[in-house]
Length: 482
Image 1 (spheres, rainbow, N blue to C red):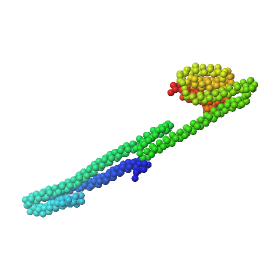
Image 2 (image 1 turned 180 degrees about the vertical axis):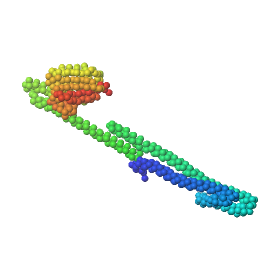
Image 3 (image 1 turned 30 degrees about the horizontal axis):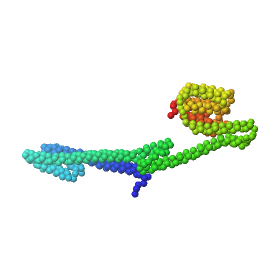
């Protein structure tokens, strides 16, 4: 049965964690077994240490017994008490060592007991008889036999001590081998765990991190508005499903963006059509009304007046068309280097000599600076702002044009002393067809905004710090337009 793509990555992670956990558990189990084994060996070594001590005590007691035996052949009465003590010590040491010696070596304990018993019998029988009879030869023979028996007893006692020591040495070797095995096994398990962790890390990096990087790039592309970008086949399991979801999201966003753009375009067209219809309906209605009432045989003076009215209304339609054309082409620039101070003064002079600006005082305070821009379009912006200022001012009120450098921008202020602009209308004055002035088209400031933004600048209405009137602020970048 094929695996579900939803669980593929989860199974890989579970497999990785399970394998590493299994190895870690096996290593811990091995360490516990080895530690238990070494603990048992150490306990046995302590047991063997006691056996070694008892074996050495037995060998010492046998030698002391031999010395006391020889002393008994010289002066039995004086050595008898110590002889009995040493004999009892040998028997006691044999009893203590018996459980600590392997079963296969118990014959040595029996042989040692037999040798010490023969030493006692020989001493009691031969030595006593020789002493009583005064037989020197018999006494020498007894001493020689006692020396022989003592040597054999020494051999057995030393062998028993050596057996106890060899047992401890063997336990030490086993403990050393167990420790070495534990270290080697632990090292092997650690290497296996590291190897598996590295292998699974590489697998997960390929399966997760690389696809996530591609998904991040796709998300950034989507965030930048590039809905043509696609993730495509990426990763496996859940990651692949996520990539498909990203592509599906991009398709859906592209479709929605297209619908939104379409709706916005239709809304913009509807708004534009409504504005044009509203602005042109009045002059067209006036033209049609006069055309209906005009008669060829009417009063020539009246006819001339009506024709003048028709011409003015037709001119108003032409101005609306020109403003629309300028608004549509606001970003079409022909740039050159402009010396701003003489440019501003020349534009103000031209406005003062025009029909709209006659009788108004235009003051210019401008810092010298150069700007790369479209001379005619920037003049159009300044003339439009001066015209607006003149329409809300009286000839006695001065219109001020100020220019200064502010960082990487040239800041231009056009100030009037009219009634000002309400706070709620300051943003809307730059919208197409928004006007509160009779006879205005509402396109002049919209055209200004388009031209300024085409120069990568900004235009806004700013506070006049308690003074009457309105101040339009333009900020134009001084570097060349890309």
